[in-house]
Length: 118
Image 1 (cartoon, one colour):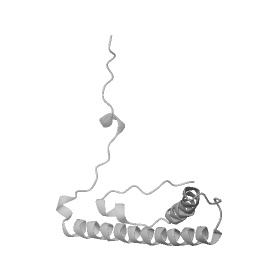
Image 2: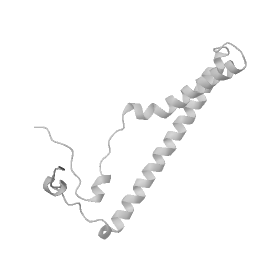
Image 3: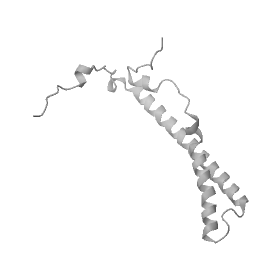
């Protein structure tokens, strides 16, 4: 029998467990910035009235440098988000009285009575 995801009952349980991010999110920033570097050289060639793909080494270099910058930005963002989550987790551990356990809501509590407009 299949089991669904574990439902968190306390705020600290929201930070438990690690899920591997999808492949596309790992390569998205380097891919987009690398493409932007490649296209920027094409635009520069168009602006100087050269053939669009002349100086292919410039295209490769720009795509590589911009892709590397994208990887650095992605790593910095992941580190920042991990540090932020660690600070929040630590604060919740130090102040459990400010974060009571979640109380489960039932549909009868969520839905309001339906009164038709006539």
